[in-house]
Image (cartoon, rainbow, N blue to C red; front, side, top):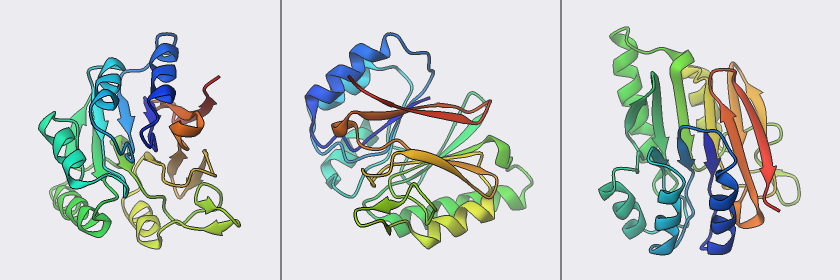
Length: 205
């Protein structure tokens, strides 16, 4: 997976990623929100691949969320199955509403015996409470306890997020690989291999 977000209208950074992506091997594009702008930003994201997953960030307005929904990319509060993995979206516009929607759907699947945690992937904007990937300026933990509790309850194989520009990286919470791709505006993005459960954080040159 090619994982990025926090673009914040930086067309130049996105153009660099489009050029770099020609050298990369991935099947799915996962965007964790805070794109902030329409128009050319969306066109450039579409150049990255045909399988695109998106959740809005807290800086994206409702019109952006709606546009990506109309395109079929926005999975905020929804489930999407791709290549045997179940992707769940928890956006940043109304996080508790999105989280409750996902929990309701997963609880039903769990009760029916249809949920495989080792095939479950979360694409979110906000981080869970963590050790490293939620450290904001002043080394303050900005992650949400509710999201950490969610991870420990459902044990997804991977949890992807952004929001905290200062802490790109990854760590393990329970059995889950948690990846903060950082801010694309600052040149940071991630490559994530779901099969091997590994992530690499990279910087655009």
